Image (cartoon, rainbow, N blue to C red):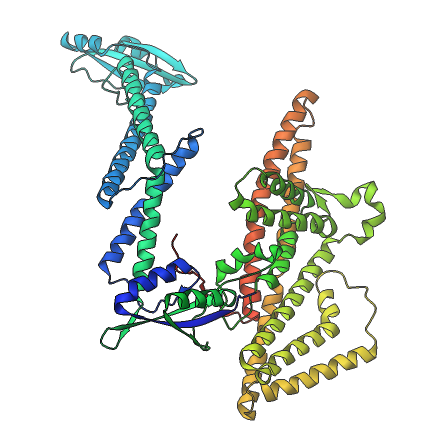
Length: 614
């Protein structure tokens, strides 16, 4: 649900404005209305710029502290902006140096690996030969292409053979033309000993640089984190200062703000105790009321999905409790495998006791989704880690209650029709709340038309997809009642689409009829993805089972079992990852596109962000 708010106007004498804002910030529950942009304020832009530079530095220091076992973090100390800038420059310099040294080490390791093929030799010897009038050239080629005649013609000597590559040198007089079909690599300027020495030296430099960064992380992380909070507080305060409207020759400053109904009396009491003026204002349709969602423990897990799309505005209802069960249902049908659901359930349970408290809501959501997949995967998908459970003797008594593939596709379409009717019912209720009963009558009539037609023609439509349904026919009385409801609803739609205006209402009703008919067809077919994605995941699981069993069938039992386990773990692990991605994306798609469109969800709400000290 959306927490109810109260809107206030505040007034302060210009000399008391700072004291008033400090008092408001200490209260910490008032969301100040932002009407003025601060992009032209150079001081505030500087604050944002400094904070932007500080964010990656803090992330780096936090990462270093996490790698250090039980770091003894020093408490925050007072620090000036100039010292912070110098400290960030030092950290940036050390990080750049670390990256440069790491690249140099990688280059040296490649050169050492290549030089090892040539053995340990001295470039001084090569230089002495050059002074004596001889040139040493390095070549490599496939062993089959090495020509023994090169040994006589160019004094070729094979140095090494690695796999099928032959490494050799030639010693010829200066000026001799060498015609050899082989690679002539560019050799390093130093020998293997010097390369190794340079590699060790760079490793020492890297270790020293990392030690410096770790010392800074332990010593100054809390200091920089506290400074970052002070920057945010300074920015928030400056932004609120800029929102004040000056009147009476700049002597009086007005400010607007919001607080929850629960906190309103506390705010009023605090302001009264300081003698500040305030007045409660009426909330209009045009107001941008901040949105604070308040749901039970179950629905609260799905609030990130609502925020991912858009918060509702204050004239709407919170969609979170309405989309939560459908998202679970869609996810379970898309994932489709009961075994994979069990993995999610166990994973969420185990990690819930190991990770930080901040991760608990996500892990609880994983458990709910895993439970839905476990139930739907067993009953609807009928698959457990790729194995069809309908063939298990223990499940013989309930085999007839499990869904066939044909029934799964029909279930997906039926689920789509149910979801669309539910969405349009939400849209009718929303219109009733926003504009009144008169404007919602046509919306409710559409719900009745669609529901009546689904009752009459739904079984026939579902029979077009796969085998005909063996449902008993509807009694004639029920059919006639549905026709009567549909006919009356059509008449209501013609008259009340635009209340009070007959001909515009009829024209708009005809246009809406075309949109609803075309939209219903496309929207309903979109729900086939629930069947298709679930079926794909189950088939892939079965394929990995077949590969693991048949590919290892001829191996000894001691080798077969480990190899089969590796194939199954890798295959099902990959399938679980792909299933998580596709199930999440397509379930969100059905919520964000089909549900929000048919529910006429507007969104556009701004999050409740009270003015307080961080």
